Picture 1: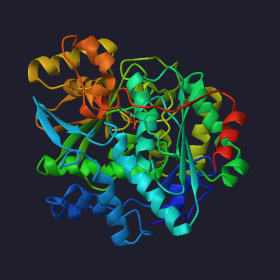
Picture 2: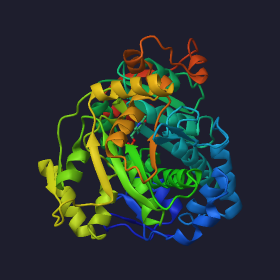
Picture 3: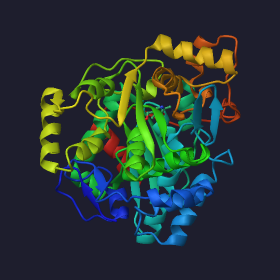
Amino acid sequence: MKYQSTRGKVSQLTFKQAVMMGLASDGGLLLPESIPDVSQCLPEFKNLTYAQLAYEVMSLYITDIEESELKAIINKSYATFSHPDIVPLRTIGDINILELFHGPTLAFKDVALQFLGNVFEHILKESGSRVNILGATSGDTGSAAIAGVRGKDNIDVYIMFPEGKTSPLQELQMTSVLDANVHNIGINGSFDDCQSLLKTIFSDLEFKDSYQLAAVNSVNWARVLAQVVYYFSAYNQLGQPKKFDVCVPTGNFGNVLAGYIAKQMGLPIARLIIATNSNDILARFFRTGIYERGDVNFTHSPAMDIQVASNFERYLFYKLDQNADKLTEFMKKFSETGRAELRFNSERFDRDFVAASVSNEETIQTVKKYYETFNYLVDPHTAVGISVAEKVIDADVPLVCLSTAHPAKFNDVMAQALPSVEVTHPSLEVLKGRETRKIVMDADIEAIKSLIKETQ
Ligand SMILES: *Cc1c(COP(=O)(O)O)cnc(C)c1O
């Protein structure tokens, strides 16, 4: 399998090259040249373990890592999960909840970042080179990326977060990791400042090349690919129904894009239901075809407080019949004016998708309701998904809602919804009082670059 950029100026990459490149060097995102159809193989997938299923799905897209090596990477990646089914499906009332939070940092990002960390390690061992991973986080991505590469040879990881603005527990999940290759950087500024530092440093191609910078955000294809697998697992755990709906709490469109790829592979997903908080650029787009930037609101589901969804470009590429020129034009218009539009003829323009947004108040009400009715604790991001799922559920089609985090990670919002309930998780409790390490710096590009240089 070869990889190409959505902007048309990069092609013929192998999987390993695509992983190391992260963002395509022409500014686009990397995608496989074709999407294999596995609809005839679904019955054979039925009784596979999660790791076996992951191998069957991922090996279609990874043709430059040997079978035994790829199997070892996959096994190692999911051995760190605390549940034997890796992503267990629970039926709660009318909804099936796919719990994606049993990895080391208790959010679904572990499913992809445990795998990506091991893929990096494999590639570097083979080539004898090293990388510096640079990332920006408002919370979940940073800790999952650190957990994916801590202690690994030939990798240093630098994670920037807005000093004093991530939740205390999320910060502790990062700064309590004391391995020598982990560098936590509290930036005096906002999350946007961290992201803009990241962008500027990555766009300095000379620096990027001389220091072998690599990316772990969800533009990396390996992350999307690892997430495709759990849509197949949900289907198996449902008993392989004729068709099913999936509801996805959405921020950067990475998770739901993986579902869209799974659907194109022949998995019988009827509808992909996009649930957003009041940052509803995607919900508006799927109603009107207009993609228009708004201001970022701070909500009870902070990992979804995103206006411009980085993976949306991959979806658009397919909608524009894989025409890189049309796509480039759309993205250029959007970046210049903050608005771009897809023309459509039918009354609803993409029948594969349904989208809706949810207020803070509804989020809290849903957390309460699921506890009081079913004695089940859902985190605020999952609650956004469930609120939308309840509104659009079709009685004849099983519905799966993805649960993206363990509720203990967001104990402040949980306390607002359920003041008398203590929401904890043992792997967070053990961190309290641990020794921590971080560097606090101003949002200064040269200072960050010097830090990277000095710590080689
Ligand atoms: C990252 C994250 C999301 C959003 O996922 P995307 O792939 O960006 O759409 C939702 N919930 C939680 C808990 C997250 O950490």
